[in-house]
Length: 149
Image (cartoon, rainbow, N blue to C red; front, side, top):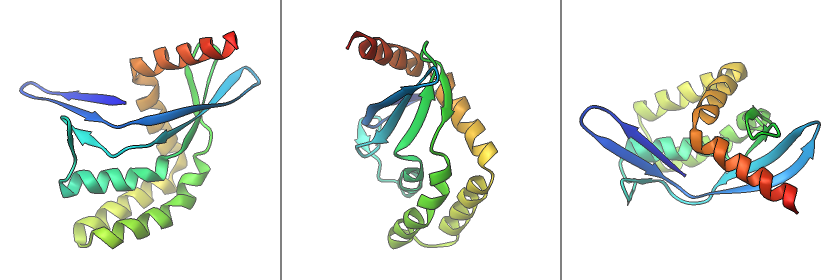
């Protein structure tokens, strides 16, 4: 996956590899599992800044993520959001093995606040996923392949 971030004077590309696995079709929706399978790269270089590494490590709470899409490939829902909160303690332990300090404490507190408000988290994830044009095209192509089998 590649995410491009542009402003007036600069352009940055975040990249990582992901696997997508079709799980099932049920009640008019296709269910997929998305998992991140590589490290994060910023402009073709593996991230090594503390802030980037911290963000990358803590975002592991989201993966693997199970989503559903309708027959046209339009995003419907994050189906396993309830496990994010369960994963957090293990992820937080990993974070504190590598990082320490007030900034890390504050960052972790903010994640816990977000995880405590599942509706807010789901809204954010839905907004990010459904606003990505590649996502729609990608899921439409996957559904076409599944239908051909």
